[in-house]
Amino acid sequence: MTTPHPKEAALYALFDETGIHHRTEEHRAVFTVEDGADVKACLPGGHSKNLFLKDKSGAFILISALGSTQIRLNQLHKRIGTKRLSFGKPEALKDLLDVVPGSVTVFSVMNDMDGQVQLILDKALFEHEHVWFHPMRNTASTRIASADLLRFAKAANHPATIIDFSEDLS
Image 1 (cartoon, helix red, strand yellow):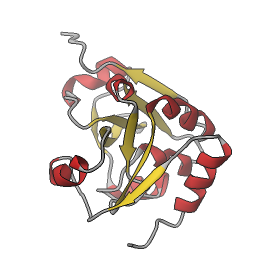
Image 2 (tube, one colour):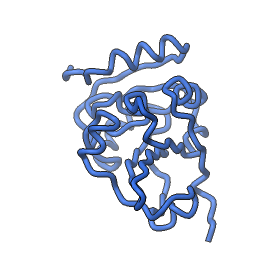
Image 3 (cartoon, one colour):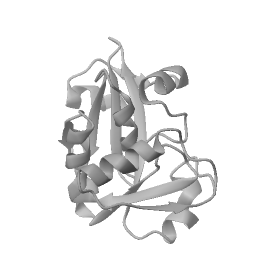
Image 4 (tube, helix red, strand yellow):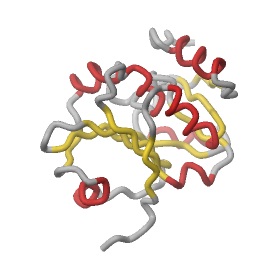
């Protein structure tokens, strides 16, 4: 087993306090959706990709989406009511969510105590009974029921906006 993230125990405690059933599986380091295909094949359910973004006005957004979802970044700002978007810098990711690139996860919003990061969830995640996210490190994946995603977001003081990325708005 690799070293847990310093706040991983607090994550599991939050799950337990809110009645969210969870299971964590250790695996080799996975840095991208494509890189982890073999790992995901052994873990049934929906698998995520997570994008840490910043708009031109300085607002931060975390998008947690199904790994196969196509997200058009050049059009996304119109959809979510922000200025044009780019990827957030690793320093901001560490400062706000206490994770590093390759370990970005919906669960990291619990580390944003000042509510500076807007959380957006892909509607497609809810089409799976269970969904998998890194527990703030990319050497493990944690499964929760998709129905518990909103309960987690509320418990982490980050109410989520759900977007159907499959809708064509052009």
